[in-house]
Image (tube, rainbow, N blue to C red):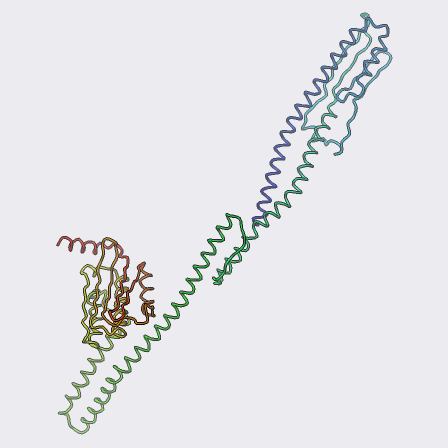
Length: 455
């Protein structure tokens, strides 16, 4: 059931309960009122008849006086009066009221519980019995009056409900219409249509909901754009990495494989010619080529995955990374400072640190033309973070602090660990990258830090 019909059902239930309670109270009060009204009428009529009967002894026309006494009750709404004598009977019926709501139902009469009460006044004239005046209460008119009141209240309440319920229906529909708009907007967001904005004028309560939705949609749109951009950058980085691996395979591995093939052919030729004494030279050449290939493959594997962090530790892995570039750029002065207790960091944090250093080294040696590169990894116990700093004295980025794919990739790695990445660029004075990554509490790290503090 929709919210609109639930609210209307709640209003109907409240009106029904109010009507039931009001009807019950009305019936209780009406029953008491009818009994009191009939009792008072019977009491007054009895006193009137008693006074008239006592004066008959002095009346010259007692029969006429009795007839006039009975006739005086004509038009009374509550009493039925009858005179019974030895020769004739005379009776006066109460006047009947009219009702616009029809005959009173029997169940309503039973609920009022008003019964007829009879009072008999014997008549004696000069000591001789003459007859009896019978007074009987008749609750029909009082019950009819109560029925008219209750029926009128029901009619008024029905008219009120007939007017107010459509108004409530329309009002609730108007109040819920913005919610339907918000629901439609949320469905669009659920389908991935994030650039959506709701501008309808709403009540203060719904306005806060609208503003929160707009902020959420805006943030989702920004996040979606960032994800698309990062996916494109990841694809670009993958292609660059593949191109670099292909270039290394072509430039480093290919020539040595060709050389091994040539040496093997020469060895086969020498064996056929019986010149066995010349074979050691070619065997040594093949051995040197294979060793070189092993070094190249090991270097490419370390770039693809930091093999050795779990086995040898963070410092040795970064040292192997520096050795890779040192063989290619021997003129650069590499300075490594990794605090000892940083070896106790978990694998995910160590891998992130390794990747940050790896990317910084790639950027520095390829683009910065530095003469020295400094690598610092330390644990700041006061803030509970690991600080990674890579600084070089190269040419920096001349076109300004523009973030390339490498820096963006580093920033995403650090952000995924809950950290922050900052960099400073000074043209002709070098480039520096600083990453602050939260460090989860580790018993081994705490023990190592305590030992160093004690020393």
